[in-house]
Length: 127
Image (cartoon, rainbow, N blue to C red; front, side, top):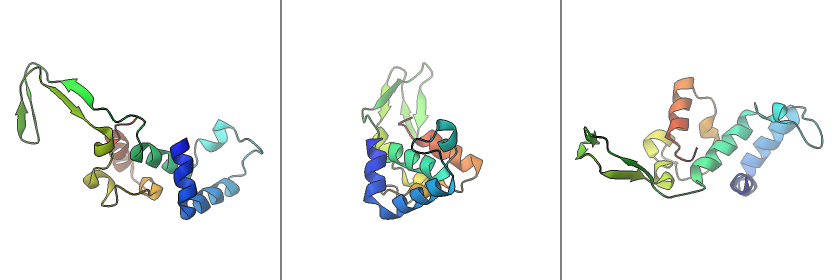
C-alpha cells in the first residue's frame, strides 16, 4: 500500500484520475466498503502497477528442471538444473508491458481485452 500511495502522490495526473473515479462512484463516507471499491478500474490499475513496479521481494523464484530437461529461448538445461527469474526484471519486460515499462503508468492496465489482461497479470511475478 505504501508503494501505491507513494506513486499516486508522486504523479498528480494519477491522483486526479483516482479522485475523479472516487467522486463519481458515490462511495460511502468516511470509509467505503470492499464491495464499493473492488470494481473501480483506475484504483485496480494503480494497485496492479504498484505491484508490478515494486515487488515486495526480489529474490529469484527458483524451479528445478524436470527429468526430460527443458529448452528456454534456445538454451537447453539438463535435469536438476536450478533456474530462477528475478521479479524486478521480469516485471519490466518491454514486449509485455510496453517501451515505458520502467515508468509508473497505471493506464497500461485499462481498456485491455481479456487475453491481453491475462497475459499481463500472468507475467507479473509478484502475485
